[in-house]
View 1: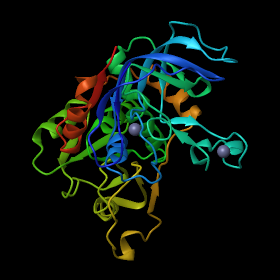
View 2 (view 1 turned 30 degrees about the vertical axis):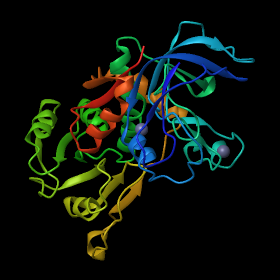
View 3 (view 1 turned 180 degrees about the vertical axis):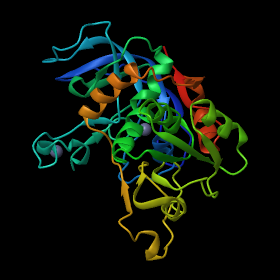
View 4 (view 1 turned 45 degrees about the vertical axis):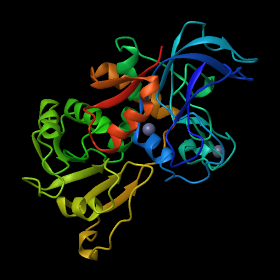
Length: 328
Ligand SMILES: [Zn+2]
Ligand SMILES: [Zn+2]
């Protein structure tokens, strides 16, 4: 099979011929149809996440069809369309796993990071962590639901019922969350890179009532903000924009350093928090909601061999909606 392999962080992916993987106990072999390209893939490729000690196939928004099941995998039929997310395996025994917080499991293994992912023609995955893909989504359109949508959903839940929501960074995740937030009756305020009129128009087209540059003050105070941009300097900016009691959620796995800021920005019970990974429950809830709210994804597709191009366009902010590799 063809695969795009990261030999070591800081180098471009290399197109390689590899053996089709054999599903182990409890795993399914998937023929990959599409795989989303996420900012986390960029962090992996750029070496911003620790402990990557061997070559890996990135990609953790895999849409594929079941070709075969390994020993003991009984749940899915051959030909069924499945999604594979970032959370690839957890221990099932630690206090986090046993309390509905498997996203925090210290032994967790992640797709396209510890485990080979979907920038390849075939992938294996632990069947217990796969999700059936809802009907009504094409392969390409379904892929961004599996991380951009899912992490966006978990982040949105962390804002409680905040009626006025700021979204900093209007890429793959925000373009899905904006639709869900509007569906829930919230008011959305979108912040983009300064001068990015196209992204601002895109945000308005998806229901944002205001869109402006990340340094601008919103027309009225916010109740919560989600930071999708991995820029630490936005934390005090967002804190300044939220009312007393407001929450600022950092949705990314990596962020540049947060500059120091006066305590009065945090005072009055404002909260800064991060969101880490996902639980399977998040996936089940979100995929059901996606259908219910008729969330649409806007994708820009690239052939598998152009994964490096997709990553570099993501790095420079030149993707409208979500980048997806069209594989099968
Ligand atoms: Zn665990
Ligand atoms: Zn991701």
